[in-house]
Length: 119
Image (cartoon, rainbow, N blue to C red; front, top):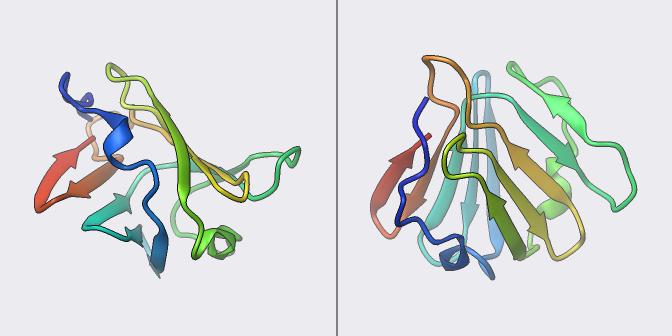
């Protein structure tokens, strides 16, 4: 729906640890250490192991291996500020790819230090 802000620095989320993952019918919330969370409402891809195929995820989620990133840290983040696409690599080599272009709907939100960025 929206692009990432020009002043968004992905380095601020590197090193944060996954503490909790919550599923609901049309929403996925990932809570990290140090006042950071991701709320996903659009499609995303996830790969748990290096070399494994990325699975396309949509809502409602019936099964997921996202629990494999619990207690893992964010190693790196690549993002396209125009499309809002974001790839998050974890310390166990898992990869979460968030798609920003979801038409007129919100794809995901980042909650950082009390603020919210809607993509």
